[in-house]
Length: 243
Length: 67
Length: 251
Image 1: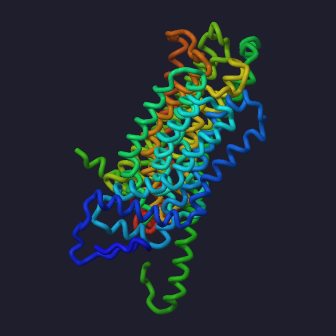
Image 2: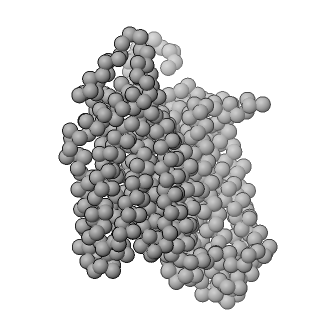
Image 3: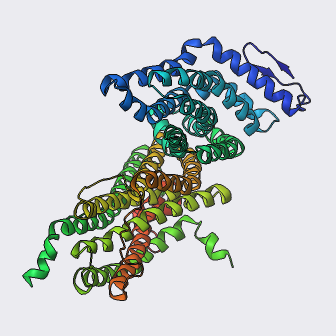
């Protein structure tokens, strides 16, 4: 099987035997999606910029007083992360659907869920990691103390991949539909609520000086659940969309 | 009797609650019936138009050919 | 033994059956509604803490129960459609959605109206009502996804997947919302004040729940009839029915 890494086009040889091991396949898809995603860096930076924007809006609309900002920081930062993820999800499958790569993926003799997991990981690395990295910096502007800041970052690190995975289901269901953007948000947002609640509350607990490990463990559990189940559901959804 | 009708002063709230529920119950029935009627009407129209077209096409040629 | 089940997969049979079945459900439903309403509004004694306002329970709880039961029914019907590829199961699922959404709306309104005399405010982010609001979003997402697809088979399968994802999430959402509320509100006021509710307050509630359930099956049957007719328009039996030349049952 020849893989043109630049365009992502794959040509099958006559034998149609899986020539790549599953792990190698994972890296190939991950590398390809990272390359393609980073080439369109304006799209990639959209979610990061949106995150900064939302976080900036709140003090302007409410008040820059330290006590108030500190109080709303966990919720605001988590909402901003969620909104940034929602915004970026539409890109997950759109370009592949447009240039036909998605249909090609369906014909490959590899498990579709596994390939989607690689794609979602690439997507999170491009859109989620910047959010995780910027969050502590922005949290400082909200006067968040060190322990709460650490817990916030950790909760985002555990939570944003889950958000991307849940979002991949919605993106798969709405890929190629007109008006997909708003519909995607509506479909996916209720699913993301537990992550939002757990992440914000963990940070709140740390802010109050209490023990945040409970919600953090739950976030980890949700992440494991999402990694194992979401790609399978998304695969089913892709098959419906690509029909 | 008036005492019990006042429902301890909560009559307004209770009527709104029961009223909205009654609306939903009746509304669903009406909606289901109305949708059914509309579908049936639309399809009968389509059938009639098709039959009309078929008749115009057959013209005087073959009589008694049922669609 | 399963022949009756697979016979349901035959559109003309389902069409005829749904027509007859609806009345069999609706008439007892309305009878029970009358009995339950009378029992709840008149016969049941006023609550020692909430006075007469608690009577809203007789429409609020059955609506809430229906809103959730209908969602599960929708998900199960979608699953049956996906697994056994029964298109009519998808028709049932599609018919459920607007009914479920309207009862979710009723739950929210009756809950808010109950909240005002009880807690002094129409909405205070009580975990159960907040979960109902999320359920409303789930219904709207489902209906929105359905209408976004032009091909009805794609719409069926995509929305079935969504309903299943939603059903799996509902317990998680529910518990996280309850946990979230407990951090802020302290012990939540239970709407049923006494730990055990007296029988003369309870029986109208059971009657109403049964009435609402029967009503749902009846109105669902009516909706499914229309749905089946619309989907099967191209077929011979449907055109016979529409022309009035059918020998099968149903108007």
